[in-house]
Length: 185
Length: 185
Figure 1 (cartoon, rainbow over the protein chains, first blue to last red):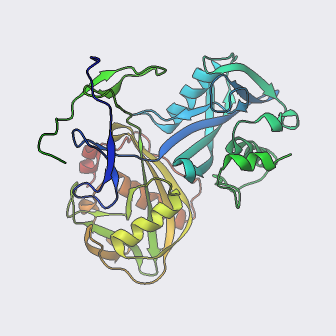
Figure 2 (cartoon, chains in turn green, purple):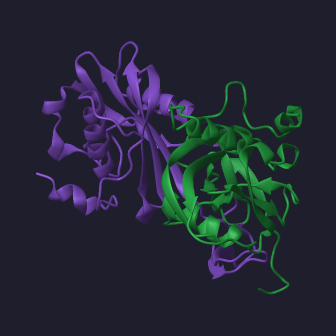
Figure 3 (spheres, rainbow over the protein chains, first blue to last red):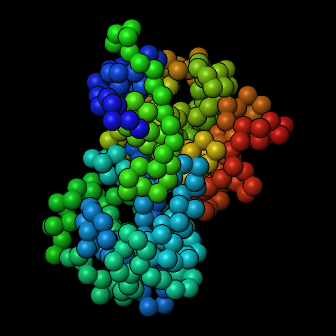
């Protein structure tokens, strides 16, 4: 890469054979298609409770989350959920079933969250400062990173207590805005 | 766009704060992140059977498919499935539940397929040359566009016959390669 490179510059235009405006590079015509992103993750259970990771990175650094992240190319959601548990918690997990499909429309994000069991130990990966196991009632609810983490914990607990109806979607009236998590006390 | 524009040219490099190689523009350093794409669609049932659309466009022009397509930005999967039924079959549908999550890893594609009921009429949209309703046993199985259409039809029929276990994933041993559909007779 030389220092003489030009700066990226995109304008909005409808490409040929398309119906919506996209970002088109003003220099070369490259169309940067924006697509919703898939987040894969899991509620990891072990004898002592539920495994959570303390985020080492923004957004929501210092808050607790499920092992979850973006699905990579050519990866199945199940493989992605297992990879994230290994990356963030150095944890091998055994997936059982699909707990929920959540949509954060504002972020164009679809989350596929599985249920799983921990198989072995755990330790913080590079994106976590801590990994710990909490009994459901001891989860630090005011230190949870994202609304959908609350949703998944509650939906998983509901199944643990004999509930049915999975896979769940967003709780009624909740679209995943960050401010919703503030409402919770 | 002037005729003096330069051609797009990308090389592979690992961006700062990333772990995988991405396509980086040689001209301006723009990183073209490739992410798996989400396809949303539905098995649409009506009294007479199942609604299918004959594709007016490639790939698999002339073959029958479910109303399905790429999820758009800021759209929920449910809204996307309804939009596709309207676009491809001019059909209003009432979604019930999630039938399946299929992965075509080769294409980096995750498909969310719902069950739905037709509410009103239907007609070919711009991407279809025909829309028709087939009884399950009359579906033209050798004119089906994609392997996952077979899977969804079979999984939906399994539920109709009292089966359980949704949402389903890829049938055992099937990863969605096009040649698999040729095996079917």
